[in-house]
Image (tube, rainbow, N blue to C red; front, side):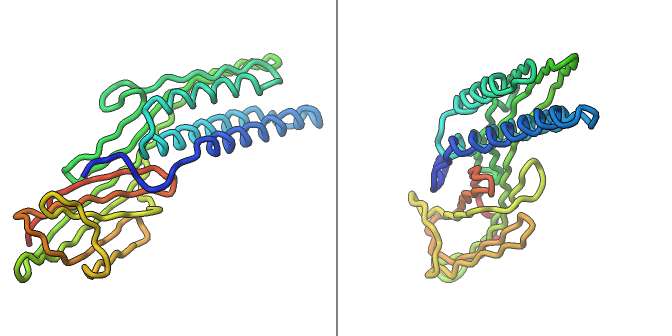
Length: 251
């Protein structure tokens, strides 16, 4: 079961607004700090950190939209808008923010979507940035990369019962940038002939959240096929969707 479609829509406008508010606030504080007391530590480093943080917000929001059915061009479009805004808003000097999208495999236009049948699913986005600031004798050149990756790992086993009835157990691990992450939503499907079905109370469906990015799901169902295939769709707390399929092992 492979389809880039999860419930709910991501409002990219909201993501961009958050990034703009962060940067606008930092610029205000930066200008105010210079006006009040020139002798204190220059808050330029805080401004740079805010640009980096806001850049990540834009990448995360773009990937969330793309993973839920948006086009891969969304990332480039949003980063162009973001770079243009940063350059226009900064009034204390000259600010130039450029970016390039990663094109080396497995990325294309900065996006890596791989929802395979081997128990591994990946939704990722990567862009490299260069930031230059010219401000009252200060010349800053900074390069940084933003790499956002949501990974889903699943394993499945099943046990034959009476007739076509099977006990199926599925273990999932959700990761953000390689570290355990919590899911906003998890949907489990199993295949019976040509149909993908969702287990419910009638299947004694249970899910255990271990609180560390690991989830255990169990159900009983009549499955006519000689193999048991399951699919898990996960939405992490950043609204990024990822999916993985696997053929369960008989025990």
